Image (cartoon, rainbow over all chains, first blue to last red; front, side):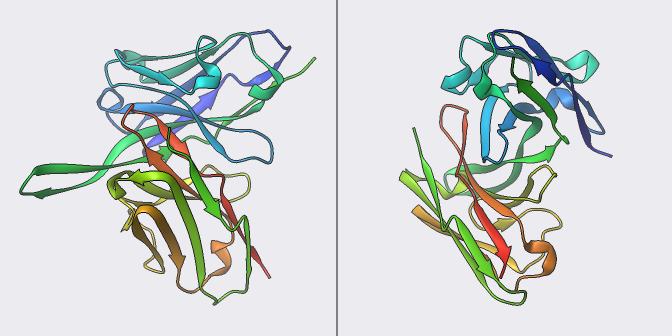
Length: 130
Length: 109
């Protein structure tokens, strides 16, 4: 069964740090980009960061740049999010998700790919409060 | 940066009715990179539609997507009780980043 399981959430004071983990199983983890997506209480989804299959490319939403670091260990089938200098507005459920090529087609100009987040974990809750 | 605006914020309908949800992009985007998700309370999102109009694996055919350029639509032809949820559109940008719309809640009238 394809599965993502997050852990590491909890209560932390403003300015503190936390490291989230996401354990992948049931698929070849090293073949996929991976993302972190968060959802503040009662709010919508916000993409936070993603990382290439080999870990050499990483991208972040502006609001977390310089504070959060995404990483992965393909030998352990694990994704991580190191969160430093946490703020109240970082309070959210954090999901890991698989970035995937979910479809493709071929025409005269070559192959064209469709992308989506096709596997999600159940989420881990981060609360930043004093 | 692409901004996705969904409307309406809330849609109040009865089972069996048709739901039409809108997602408007701040500039023209490729339909290849437009997806829709469903999220039920306490659950993770689920991929419904990719490439603006293709159903993901296991998604019933009462769900359909359409659109191009800046205007995209998710249609649920006949609402089932399990379809009452929040729906998000999403765009995959050229800088390998993702953007979500703010969501449309489909609630029971």
